[in-house]
Length: 434
Ligand SMILES: NC(=O)c1ccc[n+]([C@@H]2O[C@H](COP(=O)([O-])OP(=O)(O)OC[C@H]3O[C@@H](n4cnc5c(N)ncnc54)[C@H](O)[C@@H]3O)[C@@H](O)[C@H]2O)c1
Image: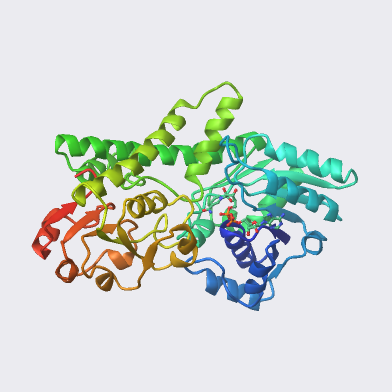
């Protein structure tokens, strides 16, 4: 199969690399010429574990190329994937489809033989049909079908998720498109991973429903955590007890500082907007969005209390600012609410993150970036564990406390325990829901 992947970001690059590893010939296209230049030089522009090795292997095998020439990549491709961004449109929460439709127009002009145009970007119900119309009207002679193939990979575990997915969802309307899609995913068919073939609208809806459900699950447990603090229960015990129920499952039940990331915030907003557009308000999703904002605000209050009621003049060390570990992605990270609130309140904030600095420097003005947690804790009034990178899971708490002016810890990921912190010499240990 010859595949063109339009958009070489977190999803496009991982998908392109993995498809080439399946044995297909893939050209990854991006309009960001600097990104393509880096990729051509063998450099991976994002942090995603294992991606560099897999990319190198498939480039060396001659199955994977990078280009900023969309037309050349589309010419002769049997499948053209659209994997461009669909951020929140300013002002109304709707998914911004500008990039998708611009890509569709460019693809239309470049199509030569029959191709399936596959939307991998997360898009509202009805978008695939719109893509079909855009291509048909831009190039009435084009011989093509559209397909919806939403992506479920998790940043930080993207390759594993792509290669061993819980399921692949494919929305199609023609037998020809179904055939092409099953050829593309043949290695997964052969290994019995579930491939759900359905209609376009259902495929589009599955992606939003899945993300909204996961955001709800997290937020539900974050709300339970707030109540645990009031009634003296331990949310870690509660999560475990709840998660052992096979009907519920133990994933996405960890209390923390609220969800963030490139997907949940924008996808819940888009689903809420789709509901409003159809006079069918998505009340649960709307509430989840509101509660999640409140969770982040509650964290700021928690930290302010830990600083004795004011951030002014305090030195705070923040461990981890990416939205989750094992990624450099800062999009909608809780740190973007919490850190500016501390800086704005007059705190001197020191930040450490194994991969977040390149993205985070511009987003978190007024903070000092350091490398070593112990050095960063020197003379500090509070240490905040905000993103649970492995590097922060086994800290020498005694050494950390010894360096601080006031040994206080706010563990917003519930990594440590009050007892361990106390034994290490911390005078105060604050967690979430415990
Ligand atoms: N990031 C995730 O974990 C994840 C998971 C599942 C689904 N998704 C969905 O996948 C889509 C892409 O997300 P992402 O995180 O990879 O975005 P991203 O911003 O990392 O990458 C998008 C890329 O598309 C490029 N682009 C835009 N228009 C283009 C055009 N006309 N031609 C060529 N390149 C173009 C941009 O330059 C950019 O490099 C979104 O719809 C997102 O919701 C993301």
